[in-house]
Image 1 (cartoon, rainbow, N blue to C red):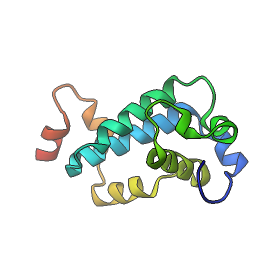
Image 2 (spheres, one colour):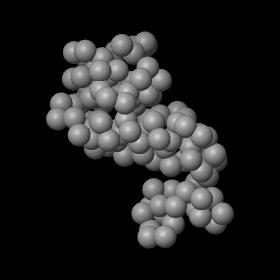
Image 3 (cartoon, one colour):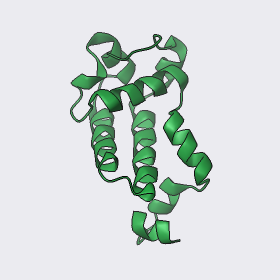
Image 4 (cartoon, rainbow, N blue to C red):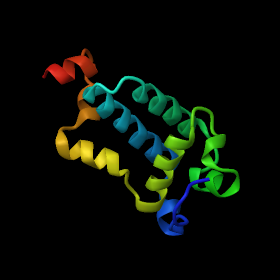
Length: 120
């Protein structure tokens, strides 16, 4: 289970799995641009698991813990808990501040991957 205060029920209820998966994917993309070696793949795998899960992540957190999702270990579970509790991920916000561009939008353009985006 996640340490810290329990999730704000209103904020947690508003956070759907697609939004959480989108945040994890953006974090993965930004970490890849920073040259972090293994975390981007782990965050993408966790994003896929969160998006495929029919139950909401707040309900999973309350029932059995987010670590029960495939590809979600303790570190990513803490990241998801932070997202549930605060509505944001501090590491993602720091990376957004360091490079204030629409990374996800640019990566959606055909022919632009993380390496080319870093070059740009």
